[in-house]
Every structure is written in C-alpha cells, then in structure tokens.
Image (tube, rainbow, N blue to C red; front, side, top):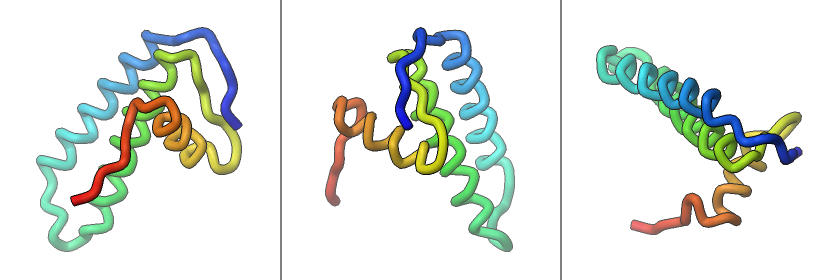
Length: 85
C-alpha cells in the first residue's frame, strides 16, 4: 500500500548512505563462489535508493507487495523509465 507522509529528507540521506555502503561492500567482496549474494546485494541497493527517492516525495510503501508498488509508483511518476537494449 502506498501512503502519503511528510517528506523525510533526513531518512532519505541515511538510506542513500546505506546504499553507498552496500555498493562498497559489493565491490570489495569476491562473489565467484556465491553469485546470488551479489544479486541480493544489488537488489538491496536498488530498494534503498527507490525508498529514499519516494521518501523525498512524501511517499511510503508498506505491507505485502510494497516493493512492487514502490517501483510502480516510480514508473508512473516518471522517476524511472523502462528501457530496452
């Protein structure tokens, strides 16, 4: 469920730092033996960045399916767009 909240720039900054820390972790670890760990880590980075962006807009996704609803919100509001290669 998407709910309107007061924009929270401080929490967004905190999430951005967490995403940067996770990215540093990804770059420092050899994931050859456990490649799914790398995928899971990148997923967390994307989730943190999407959540931070939504928080700056006064949006919070909660409950079951929150991540999908968050991505849908970002697409609908053109914060991210589809692309093909």
